[in-house]
Length: 82
Image (tube, rainbow, N blue to C red; front, side, top):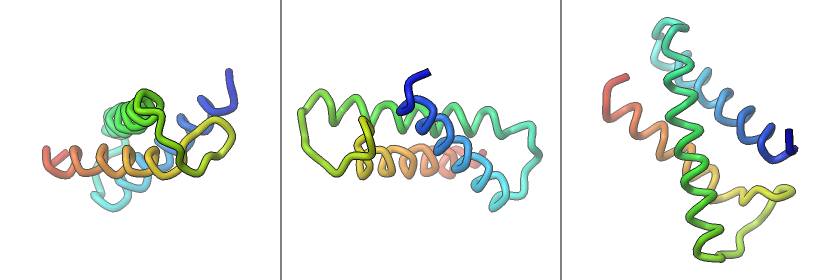
């Protein structure tokens, strides 16, 4: 597994667990949260790569857009009341 993919999984899982703690839902929803947040993370990464925008990087990851993608995933969860 490439290091950037491991970091993406880890960051999205931590965000999903944090969201679950804040919302006080059961742990059964964590995989759903994880998928939605990972999707936001991945879409943000793809957009920045596609537009060839230079932002601060951590290895191969674009830090700022990835965090924006995580926030977008969290916003989607919040808007859907999940």
